[in-house]
Length: 115
View 1 (cartoon, rainbow, N blue to C red):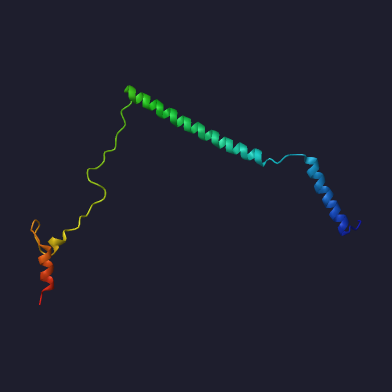
View 2: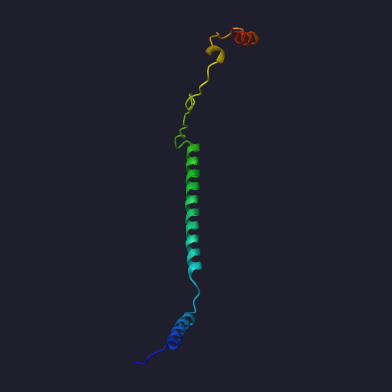
């Protein structure tokens, strides 16, 4: 068995790797695969979209001709979903009745003149 030195081994590895790259003479297949997959997915999406569109159109035509019952419309509740809380009138909180005439100036003077 002949002994190879480092230079001979590296040269033989380079020659084998370059010979396989040159002899294969093929282009990378990644763009072809990616394009095929993307095109297939896009084509499938178009087919599904058209199928849904034409099915709805056909059902609408039958409904307009009276062969299918009309669509049920969801009824909205009369009561709003959020309950609105109205805060009480501050005058009622301090003891005044609704509709009473309150003189603000007199009330202010009375509170400052308390001895």
